[in-house]
Length: 169
Image (tube, rainbow, N blue to C red; front, side, top):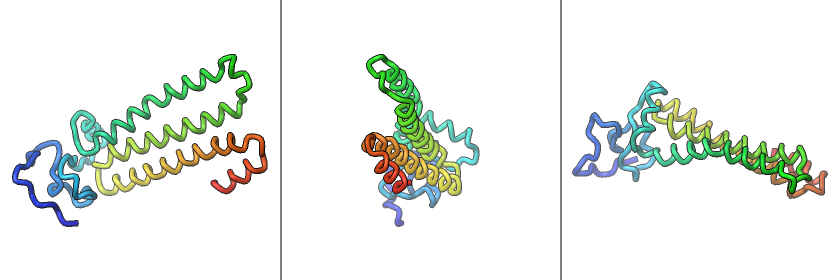
């Protein structure tokens, strides 16, 4: 990938917290249109956590997934608690299980994605590992939406329910 032409004004100093595209390590340059905000490679995961305190080109990705991961357990608890209200007396243990599957898998996806976007600046090997975990989180949440979805779509057709579960798993 050819680097974009060097801008006449460098937005970050050589010693700053972030780098320009052409200053970043080769493995970090996956998008030539993102010209700045690359975090320096850091071999220490604790040191990478300091990137939560400044803007960089992964800030939005990190915070949207992190805030979602922090709020989802509260939302899940609220939903599960509301299902115990008298008007939902027909809610079964299986219904609780289906909601729990969805919430747990969504939480896994959000946590893996947060880790990928946050810890990707560690090294190329770590970035590759966390990228695989991010993709695994997407697969997990996909399954976590299929399982309850199939349960409710085929609620009255147990044989079709089992057939669809076997096909998607």
